[in-house]
Length: 346
Image (cartoon, rainbow, N blue to C red):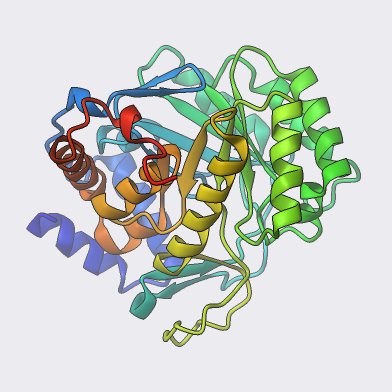
């Protein structure tokens, strides 16, 4: 991390977590965030669900909820950026405080509750950047008070058709009551059937929770295959609290992300890789904080990875460092392309 980036990251940590998040968005908008030198290594070029990526390291949903800083984020070196979650109607989310830094654990707990400016605002921003380079996806959520949550996903998908490179159906946030019930077999089949019937040319991904049993995993894998989902994102935040947590706020309600999620989410990723056996590409999320953790996800079956929480602690130069380290590890292991390493440990 450069001296300026390190200073900026430390300054943000003097603010409450949500205020720091807002300040970081403002810094990106104003061009105050130092852009690291990006060397595009051909070994990192890859594709997933027909999308051509300059590298396999993406930004997970939750940071740029309203599509405000897509282009500055791409300049940091991300191979793709996922905005959202967006809901059809604007939503304030849960009461504050609702984000907690667990610095001693290199983790974050959040219970944001799909706070966002709504579909109309996001559609306007996406329309304004049409034609610009970069792979951009939209994470779709449901309003908390919606009578038909499946219809919310369909509504957003239809409204944003042609404005994004992929869409993610997010049924795995722990902060909207009852949302994870959509992961059950019957509910998931109905949801994915309706979503895929409404989908256009852009691929549709599904994002699942890490808190799944063997039966859940088998049901989700079958539903994803049967309904023609283009990729599976494994995984969202966890409601579990490992005994290893040491930080003061470790008992706060919400989804835990960051380093403590790495082992659990990677084991689930590998289990999906074994169950799906290449039928559906996977994106690995949870505890990616350096080149080693990104590489481990890829070797566990991920065609691409996403991160978010690690940015809180490592700052904006993290993406470029991960990509440099990934290229070094791939070459050291004799691979000619990152796709050759996918599932090497499965």
